Image 1: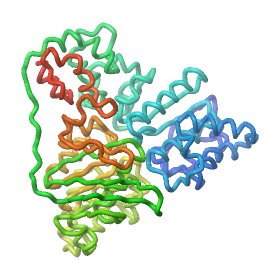
Image 2 (image 1 turned 135 degrees about the vertical axis):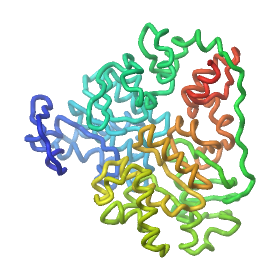
Image 3 (image 1 turned 90 degrees about the vertical axis):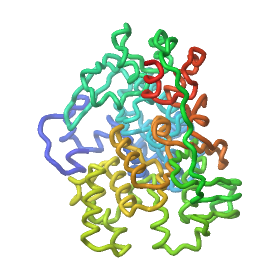
Image 4 (image 1 turned 45 degrees about the vertical axis):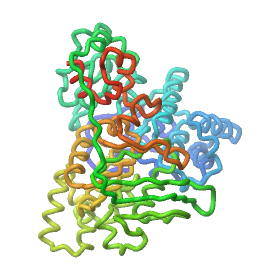
Length: 498
């Protein structure tokens, strides 16, 4: 796609199956290389799922018989057969991502490139898709290249890992052979059990463990001898209600209810992770919280007042929302104008606007792009611009839909630190279990339009089958030796084992 679709300067040669990628027409390269973009919205062409999967094959002139066979295989591979006749615009972000993956698989390319393929998928869907990709690699010999920040999801599937820092390749080899000294700063981005194992490398004879099961075996002598007795405190809510939902129901176009009998309170100072499977109703739930949609039945109160009674200018100051798709926020010509837009509508003085914009651009590491067109940035960079454009007005309550998508560990940590410093109350929709375990205090689990669990993160995430962090799964068999069974993070476990 470089240089045919993107600007910039290139030197050197890129050869793919012996073809010069820069000189070969893109339509010819597409027969060799299939690609799933970081943002699935960028590649959905048709308005129906089945037609979307057929689109690439039609352009490559596949026969109807072969297309029918491949469509069935692709739908089945990513478990979306039930979506075949659905309109793509109605799908959740995770469902769109599955459709994009199915479309790429259907053409059976020699090489499959996947840019953050699980960023919008729940844990079960992510594991299911990665198992399919691994099976294709094993049985059909397809070459797979994955770009991924959530290494705990993919590292045990890969044969080789390449790590890039500031445009330079700093590691190329087996994930098991990483040494702590090779890149001290980057080890925080490794899966929790692998990161933990780096502290005991001198005891490991078979290289670094990549899964919970491998870590249990490799670190058993450490885990049965914890040095410290610790019990983890539960952070309590302030008791001051800022948002209240009472028996709320919601449906689109009088279809079956997407949300059913939702009742819960959000307290000032809460840091809530809202979690659940794809299409469970999480995004719809947060849209109710800032008045984007209205309940079919029930009440939504914001700071004691019906949300529909607020003027728009007052509502902006009370609650801000960052959407799952950052492109929905971006409509100005430069990043600087994008971030300043809300402040200008609030009629702030120019000097104060400039000061606030300058500060937040630096905090989100996007200051160098201030004069850039927002849609020219990468997915992660666009996400940060969208975040900055909402956070700059410092609303009293913040709602973030998949805010850490496309972010490395350092940016996640800086974002959460900023939220804790600036925002009184945060509700974060996320599939990132490790981020929720480390930074949230309260977790709300949603399934099929119902809240099925709501409480302190230690109570909700401990011993959960799907929504449990790696460290918690690691320590369960060792609770009898004195490790608290509600331990969630690497830092906590290191304190216990000394």
